[in-house]
Amino acid sequence: MTGNRVAIEIDHVCKRFGHDEHAVLALDSIALKIRENEFFTLLGPSGCGKTTLLRMIAGFEDVSGGDIRLYGESLSGKLPFQRPVNTVFQSYALFPHLTVEQNVAFGLEMRGFKQADIKPIVAEKLELVKLGGFARRRPHQLSGGQQQRVALARALAPSPKVLLLDESLSALDLKLRKEMQVELKRLQRETGITFVFVTHDQEEALTMSDRIAVMSAGKLQQVGSPEDIYDRPANRFVADFIGETSFLQGRVADGLLHFGQAGSLPGQVLDQSHEGAAALAVRPERLQLSTSGSGLAGVVSEVVYRGVDTVYTVQLADGQPCRVRSSNSAGAARLAREGDTVAITALPGAFHRLQEAD
Ligand code: ATP
Image 1 (cartoon, rainbow, N blue to C red):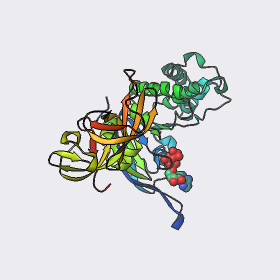
Image 2 (cartoon, rainbow, N blue to C red):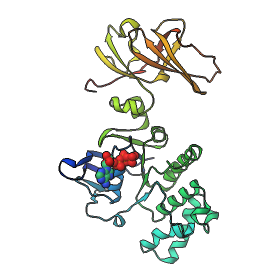
Image 3 (cartoon, rainbow, N blue to C red):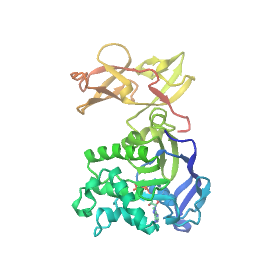
């Protein structure tokens, strides 16, 4: 359970790199609150500013405008080691000549912990990351996943209030990455430390996070739970970046959602009802396809078989392309082939109406 206390407040933070006409505005007035005990993710495409924001919380980068507060206290002017915050870097940054236990002890020694206290903390943290038997090894004698665990143990050793993780799973292969996602989540729950995790991988963000901040080009696009972000994207960018989406233009009238020559669907397929032209986003798994029956009329232009499911691209009769995903769970044969005439129906609330300004 996440607490209601605010651990970190990002208060209209700006970051400008360079001067004059060459200046880059990497962060444009970012305002958000990260709660205590939360697994919070900064998500966005490369260059959106997420690493810069993380580095500012850590104290590796100055704030150009606004303020960052930890439990109500401004971090301004505090050096990295004066902040109760620790970082796990993408590269792990382990010392190759030190053993695993020496690596984990290092941060404690730097912070002036007594030798007698260091040993039990190191042993406890190595147990926590399931590396109890590896204390005497050196980093080159470990797999990538094990090195990652050492980096985590080292970062957790001084019991920081906040742990910052910068793309920390991206160097691992897919299977190990999935294992470490579960592991990170467990560590966060067991330690109760607030985690701020940076990734460009939307699936990773949805899997792991209590809440997600979606960023684009230095601006905050949406903050919310994985369900909020996926089911109720605030705008076209979020709908497009997270998951698969078809964008369609429709018109609501007389309790129906009309798509010109393609026909219409009952009004309850829309998540809200007011009349008029509507910019719509729809997830392919919330649509269904049939070769007989009623629904929006169209012709299949592409079929992509993906094992677990099949994705059909359909050109609707009004000219708009729309994707439908069909699960292969029942071992179903293909529902349709390229060139087939089909009808599309939708689950209740499948169509999300985007704001007109998008
Ligand atoms: P990635 O996932 O590729 O690391 P990111 O979302 O973390 O991307 P940042 O690294 O925070 O993005 O960079 C945000 C913007 O600031 C980019 O346009 C980047 O080029 C610029 N930037 C970052 N650091 C500097 C710097 N030291 N000097 C000048 N510009 C910088």
